[in-house]
Image (cartoon, rainbow, N blue to C red; front, side, top):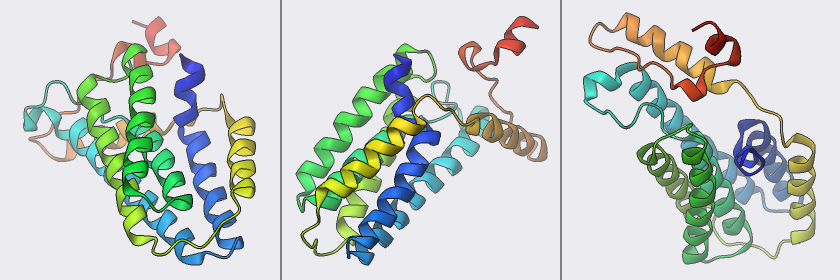
Amino acid sequence: MNLVTDLADQAVILPVIIGVAVTVAVLGWPRGALAWVGATGAAFGLMLVLKLVFLGCGSMLGFTRISSPSGHACAAALVAGGLVAMVRDSRPWVVSAAIVAAFIIGTTRVMLGAHSTEEVILGGTVGVAGAVVLHAIAGPRPPLRLLPIAIVVAGIVFAMHGTRLPAEVTIRQTASLIGRIIPACHPTPPRWSELAPSARAGT
């Protein structure tokens, strides 16, 4: 299960985003590269805001099943749909690829106990929306050679798969600070499955 879910870890996704942007620009489609960076940046920025809001002020908002929207589901939908948008001018294909990727990665997150179904749906929705926006703003698609893009993506995945960035820990710490600054907000405690082994051992 970890083998699949790690495909959407930030340690893999962020280099893929950079690699694809550079490759598409080199292949002669600078507008597509800018659209790729802009759409992915906006989607991840929205996810960061959502995570901080739900983690820092979730109790105030009255949400019991959403404490941290799934960044993995968002990233999977966004990158899968975005890659299709880079090579095929078809919104149905973009949406289909994004939904399938979000479903696969989202299922692993729920099975691993990292997120609730609602958190996966919210994250996946942001990712699908980001892929649709990317398709819309990329403009006319020139004929691109698919092999260089495929090689870049495959090489990054092979090199980075299994590496994990502690982004969630930093986000939770920031949300906790927000909760202390804003009296009405109270940070939601992390799930048992999200605690570091050292923290588990100390309880």
